[in-house]
Image (cartoon, rainbow over all chains, first blue to last red; front, side, top):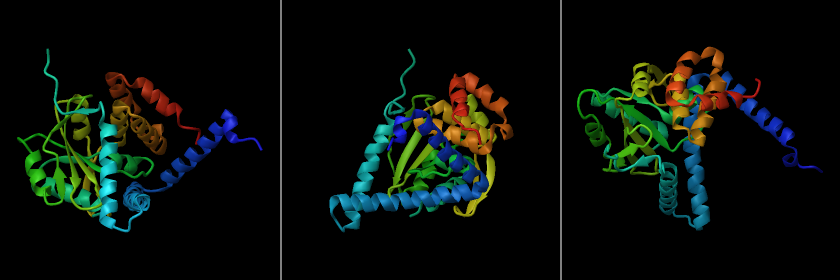
Length: 93
Length: 187
């Protein structure tokens, strides 16, 4: 059976369909509902990150799990900020 | 602590210090676009009236550990102060000081107040047009997706596209705007 990944036009159509569905769903919501969903998503993502870190570490120690999540987010923050934020403002020539 | 509890604490601290402020970042994007998760609460704080950041930081000290080192945005040279919640989950707070950038000043002057049941209080947010302009200006992949999402959900026909195009021309981001609009499939 042919894979959709071998057909760029079909893949684009599928991506568009998925995106269209997300946009139309968001349009049906009020702004407050969209914000509420974002907050809920955020809280749930942190729970999943914590569970994932504990599973990877093979621990049942919740504090250790959070410590690992904190470490990962610090690293991720450095990657995202690289070149975007600096500690010193250059002095004009 | 939940992200909404943290947001409420930050905004309450701003109010207590009588510091004019506006929530930006994922909160604003989700309000106008497609809801997405975030790792931080981003707040733009007005500089008017002296040095407002330290009293706000002091009020939050029991729950947020702020890095004493101020950072600078290499795009606009605006100041940013970053903190992380002391308790889990490790949510980030980013306080941006408002500065003398024409777009930032315009964005702040046009902010709107909305009540959020989840945050449990009134919240100042940028307009959807300003979210689009700012995201196109920052221009990282996630920012460009956010700009497209707000354009798609709001619909260019309901937005003040003249305002958006004016700022994009000034920021040299007109091509990014075109690409964002072209990325929206027929709805």
